[in-house]
Length: 309
Image 1 (cartoon, rainbow, N blue to C red):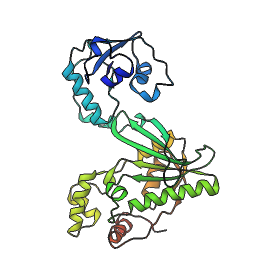
Image 2: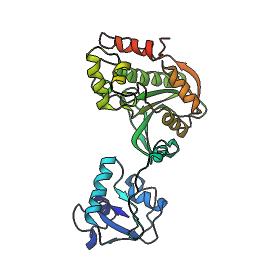
Image 3: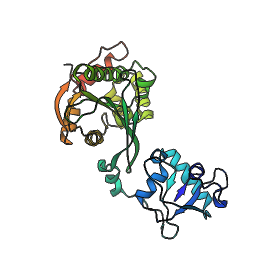
Image 4: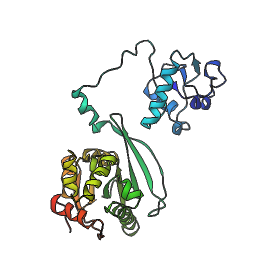
């Protein structure tokens, strides 16, 4: 395995000559050959207390230090753990990506729960955050669980697409920030009043799936008088490119295949239903407009089919 110098120090290998160079990646081998089951606990420190290591481990001379350092940097950029299983003999050549490989990157079956932790938030001090990642996609999605998760109760669910400008910066051009806050408060009230639970899925699909920079380009066109649909089309982009199949898979992994969905968008209901999720009720989620987003909300109603009741 190729691991970081910091992880090698945690594994008490830094006193071995081959692992003693500060900040340099370290190649190790174990008392038994590594497979995925034995390699994951070595890579993930969150599992240290749950998985006994199958050592002993020994550091080896790194025959490709520049490549190893590049691998660590790529791992950092991708947001994954800096650890790799390597085969120095039969690694083979890098494989090109073909057009036919696109389906692999859309494989929701590869999505899995990576970790979960308590996360007290303003709406609920007992909330829990659950992180999802797919081996076919670098995006990381999360779910915030409000209340006591139970398979016997149908949860109140909100699909919320990432919005840096609205959620973080308080933009008045959309209603994303207020919708996020209101959804969490509604789930918390549902948990306290009815003993139920809720799940807010925070999806990494900025700008309805077109990305942050393209969303801001669309904003510039909106400043010139175009509505959100026309602005996207002028950029050559779809006005709706969100991935609802991934949201459905997240719900499956949470054990929530029947839900009450907070939305004004009937397309969300249809997309989740088509992906195997039973939507027992559409719960209205409408907030007042302001002078900056009134036209935006009207466009969602008139051109995107959003409902007011």
